[in-house]
Length: 188
Image: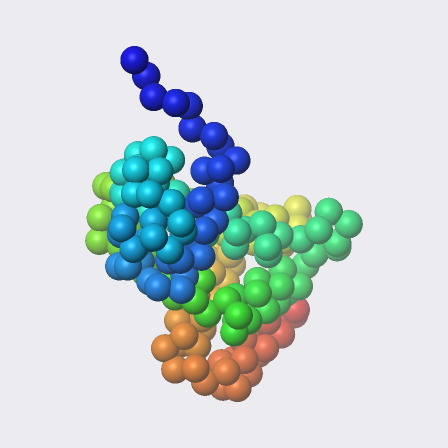
């Protein structure tokens, strides 16, 4: 006898709730009992929807990555340049309302670096997703190697600035640095 099939819409709703819980409480607090209590479901429901805690954490990682990519993508009618794309990413990432989300993102990133065999999917996408979008924003006239190098520099700079912002809270200093970095992209 097989179990009931997973209702994907309900699983997605639960996943969004789990992500919200993890943003608010941190990754270490994502355990079956407190999580299920907070969400108003049983631990069995979570196990049914996700299979295991590890798979639930992997789903949280994927959802964070999906949100970041979707919310920073250029609209189809936008004439995106590298500088405008980076500004859009920075504005979203540095929004104080997103601090918890990016604290969770970096916690997940750290966990994935500690256990690359378990979190290979996250590590495989965390750079590739951003690199692809930033390469495209440079236009067709930039050769692939140069576009990839530039995208790598942009990702490292934005993540470094964001880590500094989350660690220090010094928005004025870090915003000035981000503005200077983005301005340098307008001249390339």
